[in-house]
Length: 296
Image (cartoon, rainbow, N blue to C red; front, side, top):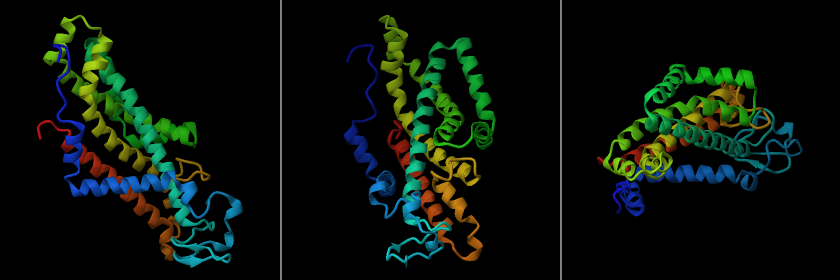
């Protein structure tokens, strides 16, 4: 290893995988999340119907209980909602929307926040002060309030809610990356790289950034769960996605008025799926934090 190269990782990919799989809870969470991912992204192939194709929806089948049959002989295993849509199909399509929004917003916020954090840590001085004051200002506002204001201004839409979630999330990544980068920037291998007169961009991307990746991965996992939860909250409030592309949050909102009449499945079933997704992502994040922690 050359004098300017970064220190070795905490363990090889095989060792990290083996340590991760030692926790039965993490394995179950991974399987649950993978199953929801396959079900959501494969919804057009495995869903009994397209719940948003009016040619496939019959209003006469509205508010049927789970296990009921339609006039055409189709079995609604999870019942139907007030518009006659198959709840199983609606949940599958809702999972896809929720995962797309969570993954896209998380990755974009990660990319932007990482750039800001690395620049602040490497340049120091007034650049660091300016960027961190912007981050402090962003973090001082309640997340849900900022997202609500942005969606009131921008309107509904998948692209708009992704933009709103990126705006409220990037500061978390910037703050975290800056802290880790400051620690890494003070290590001997970075000083050696500077002594070899390597460029600042090469030091950032080739030496400091790789050692920030474990922490970034853990934070990204946690923020993905937060993004899915926040998107569901915004959709429940009617400011998220349009009715033609409902996520799990909007499905919960659609069935809220039917709870007192005993038609629990319209709201409770999407809520249970949303809860399972968020719990599985949080469990994965906790296990990744333990596995990638060099002190453990």
